[in-house]
Length: 539
Image 1 (tube, one colour):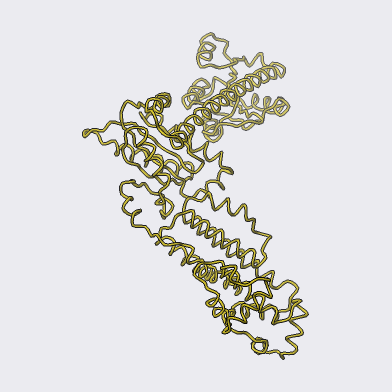
Image 2 (cartoon, helix red, strand yellow; image 1 turned 90 degrees about the vertical axis):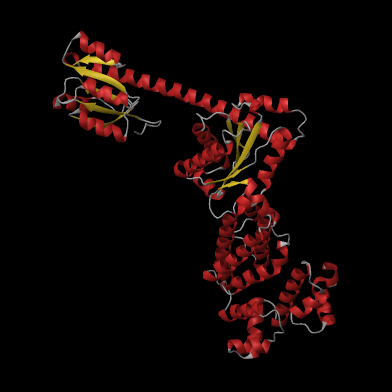
């Protein structure tokens, strides 16, 4: 059944006497009294069907109905934990009926022969005041419960952060507070478990903000663990949570089986009911505060969950060997190649399957190398920022927001999707910018030059490519772009040179050759004219 929320109250009428139903429907000013009349039924069975879909706040029912009488109808609803208020209408002035009604918690019992509009309005007003009082009380209780939960949640989070932030000098003080959180530290050993939201950005979209995600996750976990002993669920952030199990080290019972079972229960419940996917990393058994601190920090620092393709439950002991064999190469040594491939997509206005192919090729490299997540996110942010600055995108790209969004992503698939979406939007924006107030021939000429920066480019060559007279093309280019063709080519080559000089492994000689200059001295001269300083200062 669905309980009614705040707002106008709902009422239904149940009476096999059609005349009484019409009297109550037509003459009682339900709306003015704060009620919406949601239904009028001539038998209890139809009324029960309605209550399965939406529970009314007030039910006015006759007692003497065929099939199921009013008292049986009330008992049926109360067996389903319905919180409705009841007013009974009866033709019988008998003590037995009144007594049974009181036992069922019925608020009012009225004889039909004494029923008037005024008396009915008085009863409905009384019922509304009672409903309002109950709702106010429930709101106060819920508010106090939320405050208590937030206080407990904050204390647990402080305990965890203190554990990770400060040296452990004395186990007694560290574990004393665990007793208040329901963990028996005298068990002697602990198994920490790290739970991370698999696609955090999706959770934010669903629940609007970080605080709500954290609140919902902690409440759901508390409910799931209500009957479990020596388990504590604590939020480290809105993205990462810890499950801490206190246990004994013995051969009879394997505590890891309990921890994995609980982890699976939490993971499945979050997915089914909250639509939040969790990945879980089960730590090793430890004793003492120092060991617990080291193991908890190790779970936080592992990159394994960042590279999981789907929500998983893993054991830390099983991934240590894979972590030791991870690559130590520098991801940024691939920056120039990846940036060049993406820039070509922008120049060619190719935002479809080609974008996906290039992005997936890069992330295939990332996954195979298991690079640190911070490096991957910084790499992608730098790609986006450089393309924005180079091609002057502004309408759709906020660099601070982009850095923030990337920073809180905990899975490589989220970062991949973000870059692919960025590329598709960037290509569309580049196409609009290139077409704005420029003739098609100039757009095509600029695209041709941007794709041929690695060699010498002449005005005659580009004019021939466009099937235009060189003199006409020269005048047209100057008129439409504001600079002559040679100046444009030189500017693009110098901007590319400065970009390459900022990357390791590129000498001045190598860059000159990469940009089609056989004469290093001539390249240096052009660079000094453009930037006012020699290229060697940028190396």
